[in-house]
Image (cartoon, rainbow, N blue to C red; front, side, top):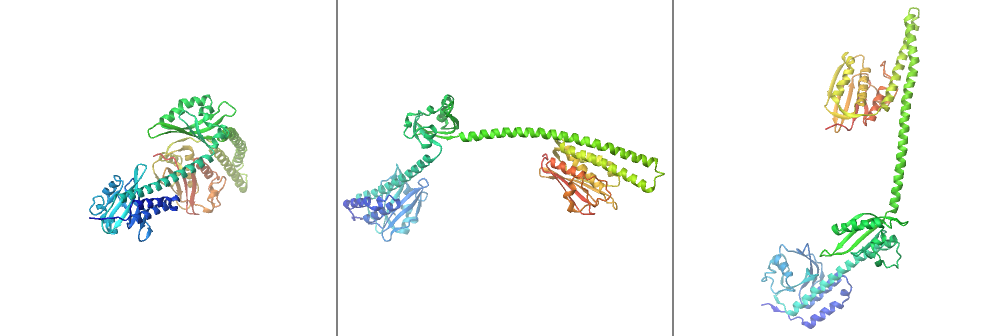
Length: 554
């Protein structure tokens, strides 16, 4: 049989309880100091080796030791934990006892499961554990642990242990209250400082509480009793109707409403506001009050009106400039045709008279004069082709694009038919085109490839048979065309200049070019949203590429 303690009587326990209550540690309100004082007095009064305060977490499944006193070492660092899955009987006993008094832990079924994991390593033989009750639930336990011979706990021992549990519960409750009050004070300071109106209203719409920003928004001075006003007192007829038919029903049904409203509408003090309203109910679902947050939107609305006015003015300016641009394009097109007509008339005269001169006076003209006549005719022909090129360049820039599905193989076939005679005249043609359908402007794409082919045939190498290779490759959602030849090529230093209008390379030889074809291709590619580039070396042929990054149909 265990030994009866007999270490302290009721008078000693009462004095110990009084000492805790009046101690500076308890009066400090600091949980760590309060718990330290409780476990120290409990250990000395009960004459046990160790007293610890354990707190439940993870919905009551884990106990963590948060404060422990050892009679040999004083307050010691606590780092122990117990799990309900390993000790279900002990955890269940905490919820069913005011005090759990165990004289011999090895013989009691409530503690036997703790032997191997906790009690035996620490040589604990007897336990006097007081559950900590807070707001109707167990939140932890005060463990009084005795090592040595088993002990029989007296009623006064168990009553004192229960008081220790009450002390810890009071300390935790005070700490919780202090935290709640600190949070409430912090929230109150935030609400007081916020520039938005924050208010609480009764279920019938009367103001209960409001921050200074709310008084300013509603035009109420600090000494005005806000309890005499309802929300509808600051609304116009239309917004009051919305309150009754839309806002309040939504609050009662869903618990919230957000939107915009107008305070004091139809008055000089009308004010647009954004509204966030919430309905608050108790645990039984009974409506307790409403909370409302209003934000002044007058500055935002003014900015919005200014933006709308600017957008309208911008649209008017864009419309006017578009009309002016369209008019300028029409005038430019008329000018181009007029100039070409005016230039072609004298050119036709020059070409005609030079032809007559060569035909009628060929026998009497010296050989040098006949050569001059041939140069005049060649120059006038070149001038005629340049005028046609200028017209084509202007049409490329002014023509409206029309996006249609274009089968790339069909388009290549049509272009090769156009160049049939040139391609049959000793030209080796290699065609390697992947199938695909591009959503693009057919005429613009054909213009690019036509100029590439023309360029390849024009700048051939006279010393070897001409070879032209046409390739087409898919590139993600886009497509790349390439036209390669084995002609005279060019120096890559001039790469960017070959796409400029009227520019011809110095190694162009006797090729009959105007310097407009590649400029046409570059301009057409730009309008299609793609890009052109070339790869070449002098005497090593040239490859011209066009890539349209988007538009390939799946």
